[in-house]
Image: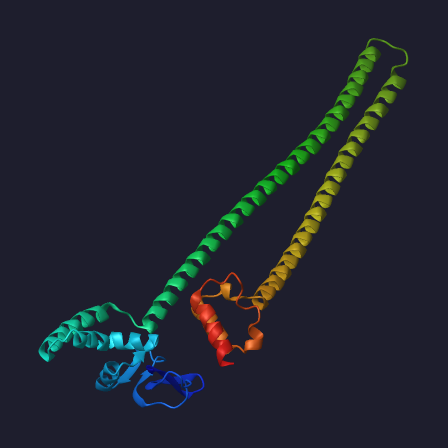
Length: 321
């Protein structure tokens, strides 16, 4: 039985198919009866060069087209014209019917996009979706950062309140000690005044009593001065200790900041080294695949990659290698 089918020609990775008439018992690249056209499906618009009259001739002779060739003949109106011949239509009726068919075909082709346009539309849609996901992740990260900053500020306020409370307690203790010392001095002064009054009233030993009272007063004044100086020294020591503690805290904060910067740098380097296709725009991922050797692309396209254009670029890279 005669068969109209495609026969592969051309070179490796750049095929051109011939539309041939051959015996169905012959192999694909075997002997043919007639070559009636060419079909190039690599070009965006599927370029076709077909001898329409010879195709109709072999169809009238009973040749059966393959599924692919039947689809090509149907798109060219050959099968429709063959149907009209089987209905015994006149040539004029066939021409009118074909003219109407061509008009409908042209109107339909205006709405049909090419493969390149579909690929570009798909790429743009994937890029918009990826940018939307990146924006969502950035917003979530900003919210988390603001939350952490709020918690840190609350902790700082609590620590400041505790420090202020501790300072107030220390000042109150110092004030109480000073009041106690003042009260003691007042009591000693009152006793001295009472002794003076007794001496004025006629005591025989007034001279000795006055001398002892003066000595006591001088001793009390010296004690007050010593207590005041000790209090000042204690306050100076406390201020010094606070300043040293603040310097140590600042040094610890600077060291922790340096450690955090080093950790951030190391994390950034690890992220740059372990970057995958899901971390890049579709266009960037495709360019990376095209410009990188195949052995270095292992693990670049992960199982989470759902963009068709990136998967297709990787498959083409594998085929061309």
